[in-house]
Length: 372
Ligand SMILES: Cc1cc2nc3c(=O)[nH]c(=O)nc-3n(C[C@H](O)[C@H](O)[C@H](O)COP(=O)(O)OP(=O)(O)OC[C@H]3O[C@@H](n4cnc5c(N)ncnc54)[C@H](O)[C@@H]3O)c2cc1C
Image 1 (cartoon, rainbow, N blue to C red):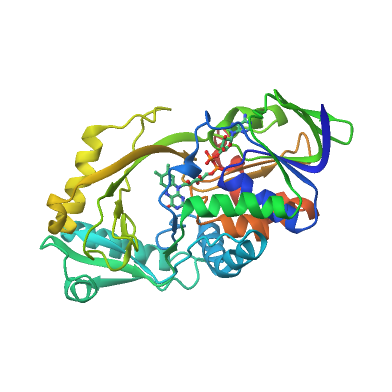
Image 2 (cartoon, protein in one colour):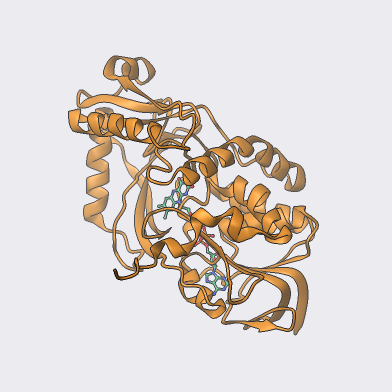
């Protein structure tokens, strides 16, 4: 079986689905191929933050890109709801990063100073709040909380509704989604590309590789070296509780039904998604230091998932010079960047000039410096 389209998107996670949605919105015919439930899927195990503060420390283009996505999010969420009926539950009421002890307070304050001093970062609006101010917002914080950094731009969505909305929206706009279609071979085929899978061979004028950690080997087929690696994170969910956390935190939030979701761990564990009990203990002890009232809370669910991490933590976007028309997209903030991926990145894939527009995110930045 062979099917043809303007663009084939390989990967139906948050990055692939956002781009497929954006391409279909532009009127392109799209086929989105996904490996299925056996694959590693950050998109189904993340925390759902649309997070701005601290993003772009060391790369001002990433700070602006994140901020742009945040600005697009409201309209993007409405657009998805209009297409597919899914409410992604966007909340953009600001967020806090609590500091435990003086060292953390100093480190956050220093990060703000450093970022505000970076040319091109632009308006940041992130400020430090002292303990008294935090207490007014969150009366149940523990005695070790010395303050917090606050940004009015931070927010969150329900990440599973976002994924469902992107899939539903793309399909409502005419995209075709094929599950159980692991891309095994990507080849130049006349003016375009062919992608071979067990579910058939698919042809496209262009191909977008957005398969999370699998980009490392898939992108090699179009002449791109994409150095992504796994970084494991754990998330824990408590039973339903009285109101404890009234505002969004970078590592915790309380849902409308009362459960508290928390965890912001980063661990090098290879490709293992096994639960690490020692790490769960570490995360739990840290949240109890922030909110001692949680010491008796029961955990009802926990999981771990793998981030798609680049060596410097910033996205990697590139069109192949060797095979123009083939693109590779990777990032570790696929929720936050979904709006920018759909509404700003996808149109550039269709219109050209990709490597100029996204030069800062080229994998070329990891090339070893030439020997003197
Ligand atoms: C614990 C944790 C918390 C996180 N919290 C946040 C957060 O709060 N905010 C935020 O912005 N980001 C967060 N992230 C990151 C975010 O989840 C990822 O950036 C995003 O999911 C990456 O999406 P992706 O589509 O690139 O990869 P994935 O989600 O891994 O999806 C890749 C897809 O490609 C498919 N695939 C793989 N190989 C093939 C193949 N050969 N052929 C076809 N299909 C293939 C897979 O089936 C999968 O569906 C978090 C991640 C983790 C792990």
